[in-house]
Image (tube, rainbow, N blue to C red):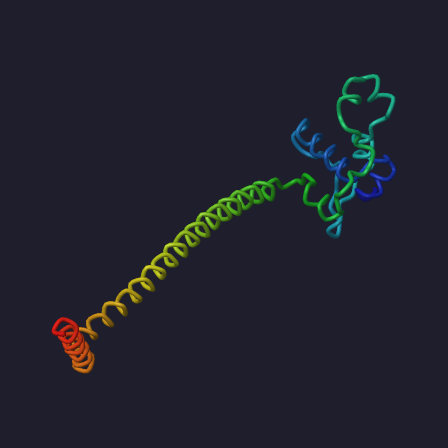
Length: 179
């Protein structure tokens, strides 16, 4: 028995490719039929599994040569994938993880859309508050102007000064007209 990584190295492919072959084998045969064993949390490929999952290069070419030309090569590591990302992408015996992951991904996307809508709504409310604050400021300024005008009409000191100016004007006009 060999670990998945050891078998992948022997086949000169990535561990992801081995998992894809295992998954394909399971789809075609209904179950794994003892080609993979789990021991101490580590997956091993049995001798039978090595025979079933091994793909001779000349057999693959003679079976379907167009397939090799049209599909990306599975014999090289994919750039940009870390080992942890490879593990996340590996099919396993329990596909519930993938369905849970899919559900969680959809929930995350919906939550992000909802959060975006709420942020937009908050921005709109903030803009309305700013406009209302400007209006309040303008109203307060107008109120001060009106209060000042009202006080000037009713303030006794200002009224007295106004009467004095009128008397002075009348006296001036009398002098000019009378002479």
